[in-house]
Length: 212
Image 1 (cartoon, one colour):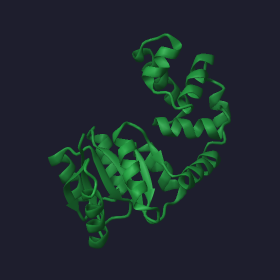
Image 2 (spheres, helix red, strand yellow):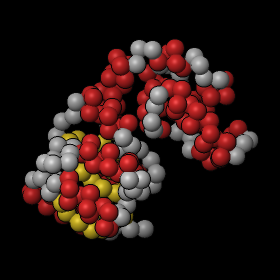
Image 3 (tube, rainbow, N blue to C red):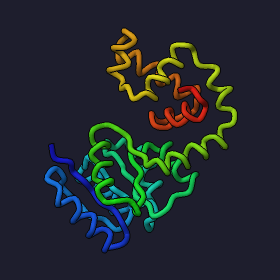
Image 4 (tube, rainbow, N blue to C red):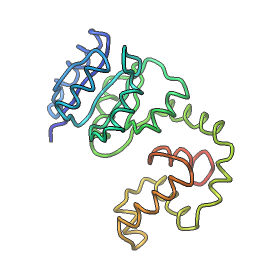
C-alpha cells in the first residue's frame, strides 16, 4: 500500500533531503514539497495525502497553526511534526491538536520512516525523550488530575488501563463483551471527565496519575 505524503520545511536542503529519503522507500510517494504553512495547507486540501510531514517552526502558519486548521476543517490527513527542539508547552499543545507523531530532527532518518509507517497504520509515535517532557508538563499543569481521575467509574478506569496497555477499540469491545459503539461512548465520557483530547494524551495522563 502506497503512503502519500506532503512535505513542509522552510529549509530547501532539509526539504530536498526528506524528498530523497522517502523516494528510496518503495511504499512512499511524495505528492508535494512546501516551504511554508500556507503552501502546506493548500497542498493538503488539493492532494488529500495520507500524512503531512511538517516542521514546527516555519514562516507564516507554523506547525501548530496547521494542526488547528486540519482539526477545524476536519481534514483526514494525519500530521507528523518535525522539530529541531521542542518546548514542553509545544508538545502538549500539539498532542491536544491531534498530532499523530513528533520526531526530533537530530534522530536517525530511519526513525522518521518508522514513525510515518506507524502513523499511517493508525498508531501514534512519540520519542521517549519527548514523552518524558510531555509527562512532566502534564504533571505540573494537572495537579488536580488525581481528583479528576477519582470521578471515573470502575468500568471507565478499566478501559483507561486497557487503552494504556495498547488495546484498540475492537479489542476493548471483545474483551468487555460490548460493541465498538459502546466503547466510543465510554471513551468520549472519559476524555470529557479527564479533559484530554486524544488517545495518546489519555495514556500520558494515566501514566502520570498512576492509573496503570
